[in-house]
Image (cartoon, rainbow, N blue to C red; front, side):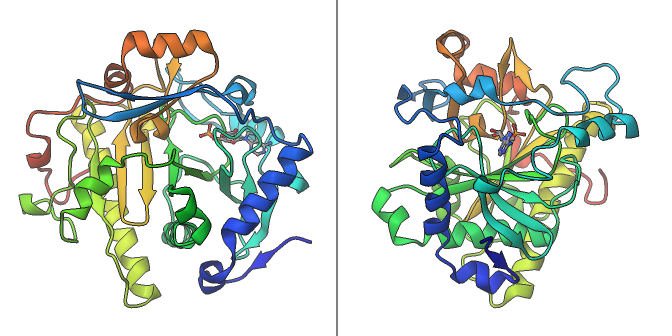
Length: 349
Ligand code: AMP
């Protein structure tokens, strides 16, 4: 029987981890997902960026279907009605495989489903029921759901025992590295004890509403990173749901306006606007993206969390040869010397 959740309070209170892990275990045992639990994985400290990276070979990556209206680097990047119709015809999220469904009805318009080709165990997706383009902005209610899901999972005793946390990510725009065009937000667990640079930065900062005029209220930046990005702290406690809705939306839209400004400044076509959005309970981050891949190495939000997945040994070696920092810089935009002081006209984009 499908679980149905009609409001955020219910989502906050259910045993979500129990449900997610239950579906994962069952579909793994029944061979309904493509997952190798003993994939080769290593933790590497990058001397250049001082970031910690996980490098992993994920068998399922090479098997993932691609269903998108335009390919990266396409000269004609216009998304036409015909291209959308063809995407809809092969869409795995419109009618998800029933055994992969975690919550069949979430607030009437959404579902939670297990990822059929997970990077790690318990890797799941929040999808819209009806087709909505991946290249659409996150709605305030979607940000509220993401935040509620993260708070629920990361507050659970199972996650604390595993010494890990979930994060959420959303790849949007033709160069963001997505493979599916039906709107989906992903949730994944970090490797145990994995250092999170965004938490290191935000835990030492007070919460603020960002503002272009005041440089003390600009997004936080990991200065040793090679790629342009912006991080904002999320308020620790909200006085009510209205406050959470407003603050999450204001923070996200500030970062989005900066993404648009970056593309404007570089003179890049509007159709090419692409970014990765990553969020945990205590921060959100965006990374503008100019290329989905560098020398055939694909990247999505995961690389910017420090998580590199290769579909086979050859790609793994290529990632090591090119270097993590270089790949992230080439797929994104190079960080600027005074990145944290960059200011845009408050009203422009
Ligand atoms: P992205 O590549 O960021 O667009 O993410 C799409 C995700 O959907 C990938 O991680 C795939 O593994 C996953 N996926 C592809 N087909 C299915 C399916 N039939 N059911 C569930 N997840 C899927």
